[in-house]
Image (cartoon, rainbow, N blue to C red; front, top):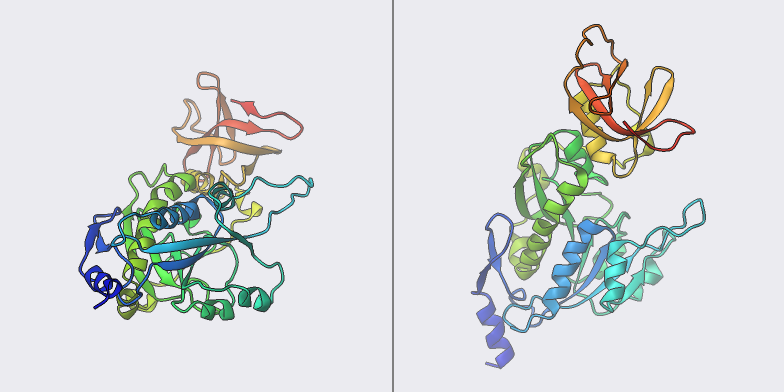
Length: 347
């Protein structure tokens, strides 16, 4: 038996401890592969960056028994130009790839990816994390070992573009990350190969950036674990319908979602909206006859002497330099806000 075959056989029995709930998994190239995988990574933001980092780091693993990924290249969306015609800040995956000399493939702008797909050569598997585009069927079929997606929710809950934000919006206390197959023409409906669970320690104070930072390492570890044992994971893959959970959808976050109405919404609803999307859009709501943009707020008690206040009424609190707003239920305290034609104001 050749040295290569002996190594491949031994790899089937090697185990290591991975992060994320103490789950265990194989720590070498998938049995039968004969060599580490060549991966094409599709990503964009800080959540996806953690998965790219773990793949890239593994390519430098000195112990051949623990090396799962032999080569990784990236696919990035083309830089977007804002209406002001100033280019937006480069996305984290692109920055990392440039800093570490990873080849960057520019995703095509057109709907037909045929020529672009045919130009890709030598990859075993594709990995998609927070990419923001539907992957065409021919591209999925182009990879001999398919494509995987790292999704930050417990599918089929929160399928769609904004699972992290909807976890906060809905006040979920328990969430996780799923590694699933990318299925043709169906967004986030592939078979599940791996699940990591996460209990949110403070569900009524958690923000989307904080949740993303907590789940990203779990997703990255789960991805590497899945790639290490890919054939066995595929053989035991679970249909999302088998979870017994009803699918829910996390649609794309829009600016209109930041418009809230204290007369109709509870303080808890407004707090969740702020923590879910406030890093993208400041909340906008009407106080009296003025539309106020709020960038910092907290839940708070009713001010003294405010028992007759009606939903939508506002009270300035000089001792805390905040504006307390009565909601349909409860109060919010705004500490930083902007009134039209004015500079941002601290309460």
